[in-house]
Amino acid sequence: MADRTPKEVIDLCKTNGIRIVDIKFTDLLGAMQHFSVTIDEFDEKVFEKGLGFDGSSIRGFQPIHESDMLLFPDPNTAFIDPIYEIPTLSILNDVRDPTTGDRYSRDPRYIATKAEEYLKGSGLADVSFWGPELEFFIFDSMRFDQTANSGYYYIESKEGAWGSGADEEGGNLAYKPRHKQGYFPVPPTDTQQDIRSEWILKLMDLGIHMEVHHHEVSTGGQGEMDLRYTTMRQQADNVMLLKYVGRNVARAHNKVLTFMPKPLFGDNGTGMHTHQSLWKDGKNLFYDPNGYGLVSQTCLHYIGGLLKHAASILAFAAPTTNSYKRLVPGFEAPVNLAYSARNRSACIRIPTYSTEEPTKRIEFRPPDAIANPYLAFPAMLMAGIDGIINKIDPGDPLEADIYEMSREELAKVATVPGSLEEAINALEDDHEFMLRGDVFTKDLIETWISYKRENEIDPMRLRPHPYEFSLYHDA
Image (tube, rainbow, N blue to C red; front, top):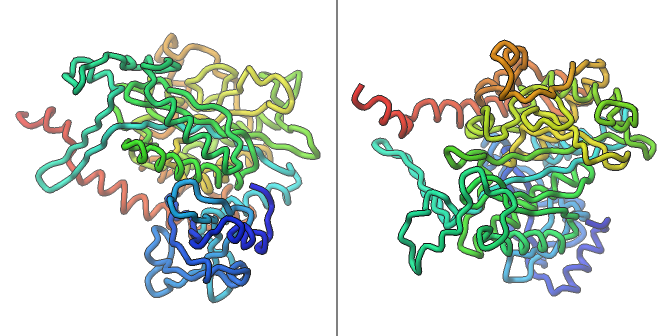
């Protein structure tokens, strides 16, 4: 998105006949929120004085006795919204305290801003680049409920292998990806090519540099969309817009898009493999033509920081109870706390097809796309910085096929947390590295821990699971 002044945003509205302006921002958990104002209420003064809203109604924000907050539009993020029928300008916003005028410490976008400022101020690097790969499912229907005496979910997909014997209206045409064989099939097996193309083209029209989309491994409508690398906060903005546009494109086709890490049993889940690198004075600090996988010692120390702090990183980067149903052995899950040039079961991969300085980076594979990118990316960066500062040795790369390793050999390889509770406990014990430069604050971390325990971990623990009836009803 090009640099713009407030006046240029107003002129954009006039030129395009815009009469509605949509004010968008992201809550602590990573959901985009919005309200709309008329063009009569949107002038250059709004960029200086902000727009008020009730912060107590937003997850993870203010208590009710301190509810008033202000949103300040970022003129660089203004765009003609591709979703609404009525011509509408959408713009992303930063949150401020109305009393002090300071940036709000729990505004996720502020965390990414501070992370970039801290990196540059540290002298270690000028900039970090981020290239996430977002996986997802597009289903025909999702139904779910939980009551005192029942609990279920039901997913429908015309691409689901489980429907190979179904009597479908118009006849069952049989083109359904087999379990774990959905990687790269052409139509008619891949039924969602045009949906993904429509989605990616809308993002490109917004000025977002997209690279690839394709069908993914799982049956049932799994896909992937990759963003071209860019700076941290810009990429986090892009991820939020990708989700917003994708959900609405799917809905326009009477389908539902979900980034749930593990919505289907017995097949691959969805992640957000995150490529990252550090640059200084126009040079890629991760590149060394003589290093393992062509990476530098600085890169290895960065990897060491990611491995050391992986459990607490995942409290932000794999932030749901469902995330840990994906992070299990098998299904290409990156559960091993190790790095490798090619081994996809290692949580950090060094892509071997990037052989030149501009493309050399590492790929951190455990995150999933439910994560709030404004928090997940900074958590990874701060861990990597800690690795560089303390020269953390990542150990030897994991080159062996884990499925051929003995039990004794496997016991020597650490793994990611087995549950959200373990990740949250790790964050509680290991977060000092995130506090450098006031990037994360103790208040934000404590709020995150409290929210996850009270609203996700404990409620899941209290509810019987349908499969428990199969196991125990007649015990």
